[in-house]
Amino acid sequence: MSYEAGSKECRHLIEAKESLLSAMDSLSNISSTDILQIQIKEIYNKLEIMHDNRKKIESTPNYL
Image 1 (cartoon, rainbow, N blue to C red):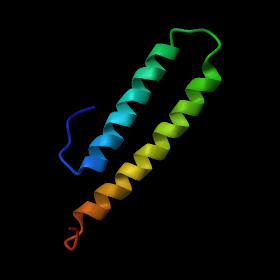
Image 2: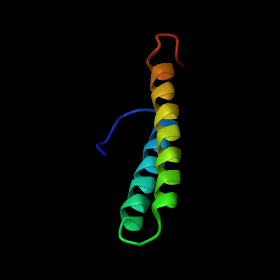
Image 3: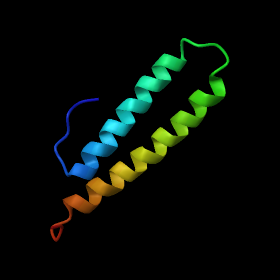
């Protein structure tokens, strides 16, 4: 994932998503972790939505 300027909240969301990607990568090398990988992907997708919403909020002219 590339660097993206933004608020502290956006940076934390990016860090959380990167951590989940790392966890999914590690789990892909362990048998019988399919369900865990699916659950982590669902959490990742929720964080992605939160991040998109945050970017929309911060891009509005009246933000700050």
